Length: 266
Image (cartoon, rainbow, N blue to C red):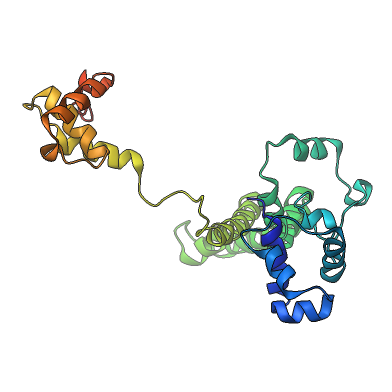
């Protein structure tokens, strides 16, 4: 969700631990004006104040106005970012959640993920793992030659278990990196107002259907009871006229045709 100009101005002030009085002293703008810029009833901000605040906070005017998500890089050269044409087109396409992608890339553990991924993709660890496996194989061969133990011998089994599958090991490490970052991002957004509610609408729907309908119940009454429960209405307290109107409305619903739940039927 994009922040409004009021939210951006307040966040920048709070980040610096400043009160409106302190900000007014340092920017030479009035406290009342600064308060109005952060208030819910914000209407306008002068060009002078906008420029002064952008200079003070060391951000771009576009950032304050909500025209950019970048505070300090208004005209970053794409060549410096070393992005491919395909990546630029993907970022511009709207197919990705770019803010979430930014959070992913700026996570403290992201460099570790990239390092582990680079090791896996470039095969850096393969030779080292192969070298370690060669030592294990040599020791195993020596034991087999000198002592000829059975394959069930505990020490020999330990050596066999020490043999590393470099592909599986590297992918496991990468998966652990991703899991840690994903959990942190989810935790950071758990209180967002647009987060998915904890209750399960489908489960609640089916439970309501089972509570209001039974095999020997009247289909019409079961459907009306079901609709009332979903709308949080007390069917018993409705007048006869209200029930008639509800019945007319409910007749447009498929629930009247088949109000009984079908779960478990074959």
